[in-house]
Amino acid sequence: MVKQERAARTRETLIRSAAEIFDRDGFSTASLTAISSRAGVSNGALHFHFSTKAVLVDVVEETALTRLLAVTNGAPPLGTSRVQLLVDVSHALADALHDDVVLRVGFALGGETSRPPRTDLRQRWRCWVEETLRQAEAEGELRRGTAVQDAATAVVAATVGFEVLGVRDPTWLAASTVTRFWRLLLPTLVAARLTMVEAGGTRQPSPAA
Amino acid sequence: MVKQERAARTRETLIRSAAEIFDRDGFSTASLTAISSRAGVSNGALHFHFSTKAVLVDVVEETALTRLLAVTNGAPPLGTSRVQLLVDVSHALADALHDDVVLRVGFALGGETSRPPRTDLRQRWRCWVEETLRQAEAEGELRRGTAVQDAATAVVAATVGFEVLGVRDPTWLAASTVTRFWRLLLPTLVAARLTMVEAGGTRQPSPAA
Image (cartoon, rainbow over all chains, first blue to last red; front, top):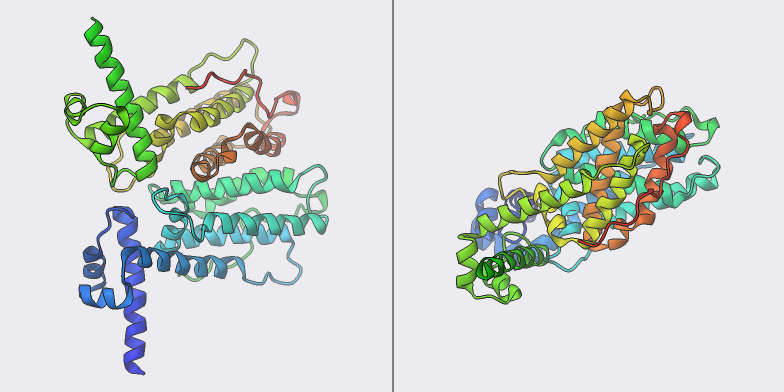
């Protein structure tokens, strides 16, 4: 049991170290030796858990998907509008991309042309945004004349922009940046009765991942 | 003279081939042999023009900057508002990113962590957007209460999002996608007297690069 726990901890450390090295060196040049060294384990221990680099990349992506689902699947407080949920979750996602290297690397894999796409996190995020906006429309929350696809295009493009620009300059993932975006978008997006949507979000900051 | 012309043509072919290989294989794994082979020249000819891969990457980025400046520096037709200019240029940029692999790769270098930043095209684009919006504000084109920085954040994040998502799915760089974004943003962005801004742009499509 103790041995299993230790193995599970080593596996987690390796996933995080792999993400850190992928983030620093890129997927193609990252070496397994750099990863095991960063994790403080032997090459043999790494190979015990992950037979090839491709397997390790896949596992980082799957772990990132779990983190993304944790961000998007939180139940909204009763009475929260769908649009407010979208605003809140976009803030939580920016926080998580800022703090969690595994999630950030998982998203970046969506643009990696040297690897066939598997779980595309950006595509998953797009689906969630579209579904939430469709629910908002069904609830009459969207302004008359605002098409779900228009809104989804703007929200997905901007959030992916924050993600990518945040790699070099983390202020793109700051709450103030996300709030600025929503301040501009909300007046066209929501029906007049929903003027109470908070561009800055209503949730407590999520615990660091 | 004929020899000089031929050398200039070979250099251009090599820059384009390099961009195509960087686009396909990533910067770190791209090999000089793959590039010279795609350009249809010998390794020796490649080395005659570019001593190292790093030099070639720099030249691709500089060439991409020239293309970006060609997109942003076009003089607007007389009487065009600054906001319309911004809309038109964002359309032209999406077209150019769709058609021109050198420009696309130049932008992607802005997110390459394995290389120290030099000319950051995304940063250059951001500066141009901010400057144009400041001019729009000075001309009284922006809606009262709309801050230049809010608008610049949304426009830059969304266009970089289109750029990055367009690598896997070119419909993100289609005119209809860019128009959808502006349709949503313009009502909050511009002063009431400017209701004539065309979200779809007013320019003829630029000739393919």
